[in-house]
Every structure is written in structure tokens, then in C-alpha cells.
Image (cartoon, rainbow, N blue to C red):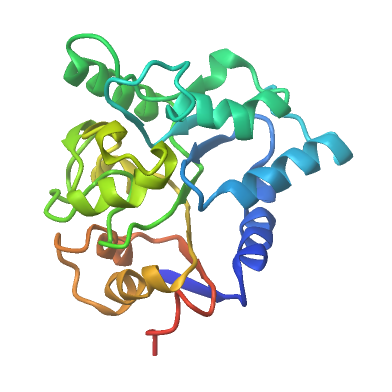
Length: 241
């Protein structure tokens, strides 16, 4: 079941996402986190709440969706660096409670299996998602099986183009592979909050909500999840009925 919250703009979307996230900022909860520009407003509000209200993360665990293959964690565009720069360095979370897929070294598929095992041991209470312009969630590109678990994937050309702005607009610097939670892994989360803003997401949002459940639009599987909230601004929701 998908519950739709319509807002005017990105700031309102971030406000709504934080209002929903706030109920999970309690000891023992497990947060599923995402990267990219979509959740930045949410993370800023989480930091502000921690600083002003003292909300503690000492007994909260997190699992991130994905990481680029081949980037050192010290690289500014690694998702490890992104998460620390935008959230973890500004709250009191324990480093041992932070989990991000490993994109370095050998036998990455085995490390991916171990990541799924950790999530099974600590099920995610709420998963934050964005959506790609081609309907992907995490790095599950169109055609990814709905029962997929954490795995190594080749990035679609459209995704590489979308991420180019983070790498000095130099496409040769953009990683071509990532390790990502699979669609099956994401669907295990007890609750999902998906944020979509901007006109470039409008078709993907329509396909996700109104279209058939089809691997051509990975996000369409969310129609089968029992607890999904989609927050859309006017532009991203412009094609919805």
C-alpha cells in the first residue's frame, strides 16, 4: 500500500520526511539510509534536532543502501564519506553501529552476502529511499529481479549521467559499478519513506504508483509493500491522477 503526501517543494518534502522519521529516533531502532541529494534536507533536520533537542543515536543502528565499487572511503564522493560529512559526524552515533556496504577488496559478492545476513539479524524499521529518473531504487536498475539481494551491479548509462555532477561533471571519473542492497532486501524493511522532487522524477513516480508492477520500473514493486509513504513535490507528482 502506498500512501502519498503531496507538498509544494523540496523543503516541505524534507520537513515531512523528518516528521515521519522522528518517531523512529528511539533506542533500539534500525534506520535504513540513502545517499545522493534527495535526503540531504532530511539529514540536516536530523542534525538540527540532535543539536537543539538532544535526540540521541547512541543505541540506534543504521544500514546504508549502497556504495560505489573501487572508491576509497576517504574519497569525498564515497558514500562512507558522504554519510559522515552530512550526518554521522554531527550526531552521537557509535561507529560500530554504522553499516555501509563494502566496495573495496576482493570477493565483494561474499561481503554482499554478509551484509544481507547483518540486516536479517537487525531488521530495518524504516528505510529512506529516493527514486532514479529511470525508476531505480538504490542501484537496482531496470531489469533487476524483484527478489534480488545485496549484489554488485553495473550502473546504467542514465545513472552515470545523473551522478556526473558529483564528479566535477567529468564522466570518466564516475564509478561504473556499485554494491547495492537488492530489491528483495529493501522490501524487508518494516516501513519505507520515499522522497521524490523535481520534474525529472515525474514519469518515474507515475510508473511507480500508477503503472504495472514490472521490473522495467524497479520502484513499482513498492505497490506490494504494506507500509510505504511517498512524499512528492508539485513537479514530481505532476503526472499523477
